[in-house]
Length: 150
Image 1 (cartoon, rainbow, N blue to C red):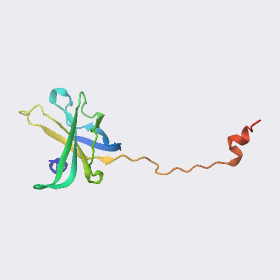
Image 2 (cartoon, rainbow, N blue to C red):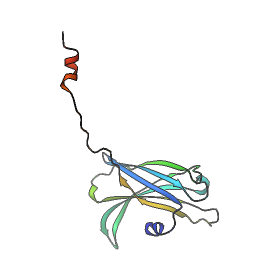
Image 3 (cartoon, one colour):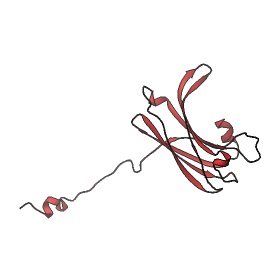
Image 4 (cartoon, rainbow, N blue to C red):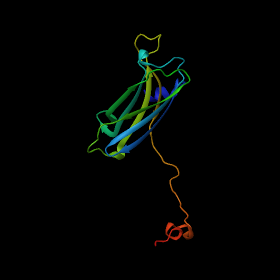
């Protein structure tokens, strides 16, 4: 499903970042609507995050352990919105094997109830820039020198 979405002309730009906080994962999914229609509750527009673990299970090497969703309401064509989702606590998982995918879908007006996936993206870990800070302190400016104790 994700590969098929990535192979066709996209109807949305989707970028997703995640950050681990304790045993939870918080996601921010940014969506730029390029579908030609307003995404809303009336066409069941939804942001999804799929959490899967790299693990051989029957015929696949992936096992979905969680699926999150939040509705899009009133995102006009050409507009961009940000959506926040959060998992439950994950206890006893191998964090090195977890993967996250974000996707956006809706039901087009011409559809007979079939969803159209606008685009999908692999969620990336959040990064903080810069990754290093350097402080230069002049000893003459130290507060104890400016205001000596009395």
